[in-house]
Structures are given as C-alpha cells and as structure tokens.
Amino acid sequence: MKILIIKPSSFGDIIQSNPVAAALKAVHPGAEIQWLVFKAWEETVDLFPDVAGKIVWDRKAGLKEYFRMIAAVRKEKFDVVIDLQGLARTSIIARLSGALKVISVPGTKEFGWLLVKEAFPESRKINAVLRNMETVRFLTGKTSAPVFNLKVPDSAVNEAKKTLEQNGIGRDDNFIVFIPGARGAAKTWPAEHYDRLAADILNTRKVKIAALGGERDCRLLRNPGIKDLCGRTSIKTLAAVLALSKAVIGGDTGPVHLAAALGVPVVAIFGGSDIEETAPHAGNVKLVSKRLDCSPCRGRPICNDYHCLTAISPEEVLTALNELLIA
Image (tube, rainbow, N blue to C red; front, side, top):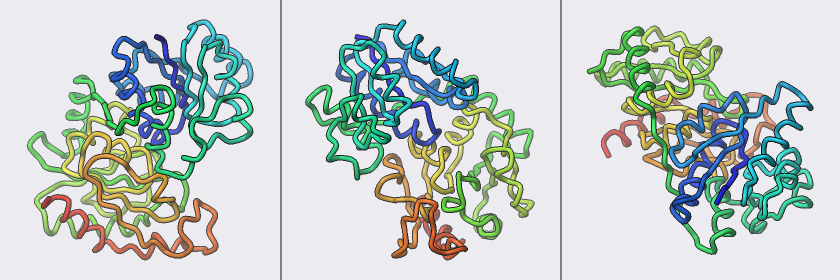
C-alpha cells in the first residue's frame, strides 16, 4: 500500500500531524508512506522515521510548480491520499491524485469538502492532533491514541553540540532554551519578559540559556546571559539542540511543538491562540495562560496591547518551569 499525507505547512502543524504516520504504520507495517511538504519545511519530515519519502513543493515557484506537484503525485500511483491541510489548493491535488481512496481532515475549508471526503466533520472543534487522527479512524475503523515518533539523526546531534560549544555552552552544561519568536503578536511574549525571566533563572539555577528561532527572533533580547542562536541552526540541528536541553520555554510556535513531541519539558505561553485547538498534545508540558474572556482572538484582537500576554509575568513562567523540573 502506498499512502500520501498532504501537509505542506506550517512547521508546528506538520509536527502535530506526525502521529498520523505513526498510527498508519502501526496498522499497515508494510505500507510506504510519503509526505507532500513545502520546501521551507522539508527537513521537518526527515525527522519522521515512519515516512519513507517526500514530495517537495517550492511554493515560491508559482503556478507551474503547482501543476508539477499534481503530475508528481499522479506519477506515484498512491492507493490512499490524506489531505491534512484541508484547503482548496491541497484538496485539488488530492482529488486529481488518481488514488483509489481520498479523504480530508475534519474542518476542511475553502469548499475543499466538495472535492474530497471530509472525515468526521463533527470533529472540527478539537485539538489539532486529535483532529488529524480522525483520518486514521476513518480509514481503519479504530480509534488510536496519538503517539509521536521522531528521530534526530546523529549528524544533527553532532552539529548541535558543535554549535552550542561555539556559543559558550559546553557538553557537560545544563541549558534551557527560549523560543522568543512566533508568527504574529498574539503568540509572542514580550522580549523584556524573557530578559527578566533569564535573570531570575540564572540567579537561581546553575544553567545556561540559549535562544533559538529565525534570524530576527532574538533581535529584541537584551540580557547578555542569553546565548543568541537564532538563525544559526537548520531544522534538524534545532531539533537536536532542543533534545539536548533541560527544558524549553516559548509560545504557540513550531519549535515549541517540536520540543513537546520530542518529550522535552516545555513551558508553553499562550495568549491569543486557541488553547483547546493548538496546545501541545504530547510530552511534559505546562501551559501558562490568563484565559481572558477575549481569548482566543487568534490574531484579531479587540485590544492594542495583547494584555493576555503582557499580563503573564516572568515569575509565573518561572514557577511553571520549577514545577516541571521538580516533577
């Protein structure tokens, strides 16, 4: 059996889809599972040992590339295609794939449900991980508990250790990772709060602190005790740094979901995101949120200062971290 999972973006969403591949492989050990993914996130799929291959989509290449995607999918002659993205552009690819069975995740948008069978549409308003798993239940008739299965390659671990050493974190040092950046202000805890939190951690624990993310994610941090690794790691090396860390602190963003999936203790700071839908569903996680009446706003606030985030104090996050590390 050949199975294609269509989930091209984004980083955290792809991580939240990982248990689908693991569950399908458990039911069909001999199945060949491939993944259709945007070029920007293709290394993420390399962390999934249950995925045998990938079809890489360079979204920046325009309409010609889109038609190439359709041709590449049809050429593989898949038996089953699962559209976990649930948008019109992916529903069209799934419909034209030529597969004998084509289904979509609950909550398909942009009229994609007219093209692809939507699995259990009544399950739209649940955690994203569980919603993705509904496609497995639809295909197998069995309810499977989501299990994350990721493997960081040894080469990435070696590169991570080298990068850490170059930035003052030795192989015997305990360190905590900050993920200060996120997509949108509704997900981004203030930089000055990270600075204060770093001071509190360094005053109470014998650890070092590294900040990870995109090139611009660390630009507002001012505490000299934070080692700036933003923009200095590939996805696989980032995964290795997370796996080596003692704990990870950040918002609703891809690296935080990756850390949770790897089983690293995580303090997840939630503001305008929907906790019920997007909170990590794996690992040792402490959620910190004010749960205000206006939350979740999903990036469409009625305020101008994201009080749901600014009101979360460094002391609250430190308390959550201490509870994690004691447990």
